[in-house]
Amino acid sequence: MGIQLQSKRNLLRSIGDGSIRKEWLIEKGFSQQEAPLLFEALVQNEYIEPDLDATRHIDNGPFYKLTEQGRSLGRASGAKRVQRETAELVLSGSWLEFRKSTTILAF
Image (cartoon, rainbow, N blue to C red; front, top):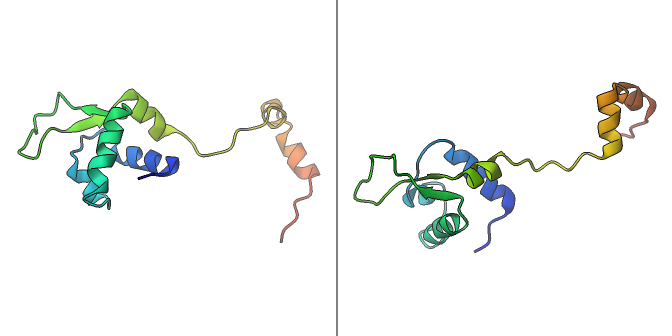
């Protein structure tokens, strides 16, 4: 079962500062077969870890929270890198002049 990086990022973002259980993935739309595999992959890749502070260890098992690595991936941007030339123009204040001098074709 493969899940795209952007989908992983969005999934981790939706956890936020909360705690989750395996069943949460089913509530998010993953199948009964996919959810345990995905949950185990999140643990093995150190994106989530047992939430030792959670006092909510119900019959369904312990809660898990994001690790620093999981929060880092959740904050990641899908945007392309900015080229050095563009960054230098923006930082120098010349960006507006550059934008005015370029012609943008609309289709």
